[in-house]
Length: 166
View (cartoon, rainbow, N blue to C red):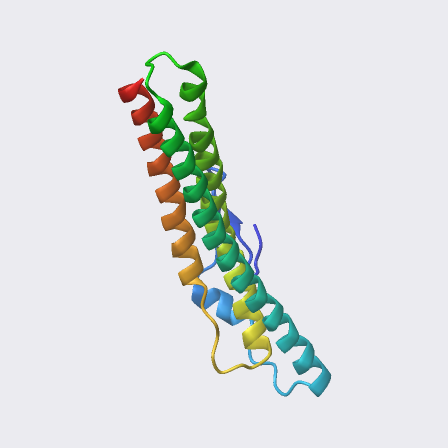
């Protein structure tokens, strides 16, 4: 157990409790005037975080579009060529988008969980740089949660389609 107001504590069951927003704010007091070099460095770090935000948003949207384009192509081939009920190659073809959707869904949920740390780091940097407006990342977090859920629903629908049509 630590006495610092922002360090995580571990209770008797081994669960970690994170500090509250107010406790985190106590750890990052306004330190007074920064030198021009320190201010420039901090603003550069904030800029890097914002570029990461844009990159992950762009990457997430491209992954969603690419997956559904490929899955749509596979499903169109399946429905166009599936004249025989026992065509094993086409049955296996349905598992490809299922596996990819589960991997992407898991990746989006993990990414949404990691956004908490990125938000905390960015908030710390903005307070340290004495910026008046702090960028907020909940948009990316919620978008990742929605995308992850959408991929899991798509995977479940593909399994349903496999057993229903095969």
